[in-house]
Length: 403
Image (cartoon, rainbow, N blue to C red; front, side, top):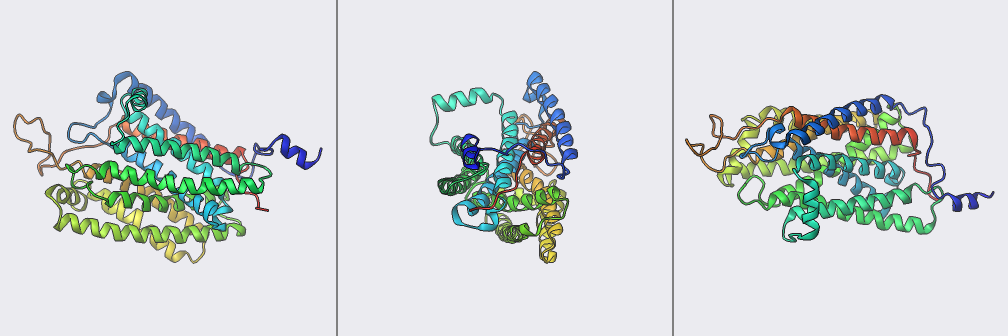
């Protein structure tokens, strides 16, 4: 049978394989353990109820799971953005890793869905209400719409990038889908920022800052995660043909961190000197209050200073690029959770007797994630690890050369 006939019979021929040289079985097993812990936690939450198991309260109704949801889905849309640069705008260095980009974006997005589904008390009821009586003026409705569209686009991209013998028509369709993924991903992430930015009762969130910051930090995260994953897959010895892609990603990540520094500077200054009291209290909670260790060590140290220093000193060393990506992804966790929690710590009214408002001595609300919330976060991490590294082990994620 001719190769043309084989391609016609099986457009996804050669998709399933076994990559014995890719050392990811420990990560798959770790993911299974974490996902198992998370699944048991989810079952207990379903039995006992959210109010019993989660530490969120009247003053801080959004907790760890909103932060981890943002952590996963914004990283996914950052990956989709990078993939769009390759497919739609001809960045050949990103085209060379397009399979990994699309697979990673898809599975990280699914991991994010585990967080929001376990945070919402009645996800099925929510979906039914959204379908039967959608409030088109609500930003949170469009958040669900955009991320659902993003998942569909990624699924279609998967079909295209895994074709064994893509045609010119396939390449054109990949360009269209890449462009749509870039646009919809940007809309989804900026709209997620607007979900918070539309809250004029919470000055820390209000405005366009987070719509911009989340997009920039998401693209930065996508670049960092790709450099980390490639180092893991290739045992910190990335092939020379991918050095150009890694260098492009390092530049993208460096520029992203630089823009994050710029945005941090003006957000802090305006919150300290020009914003309503709520924003001032939020930024003080970060720089000298209960969130200070997370802010200075996690956000500033691990998400800004250390990875930027590593990237600037790497001089083309792809191992250092991977380390910078790892450090950034750890620091980004604190960035996402701090963003959610800091805006809610200023109480809406004074904690006077009978007000049923709980606050600490400084007048700030109190929140610390429960064991159940941490367990659900493990579900997300485990889901991403199992799905992605199983794909690395049992699928051919090396992007073939374009004709």
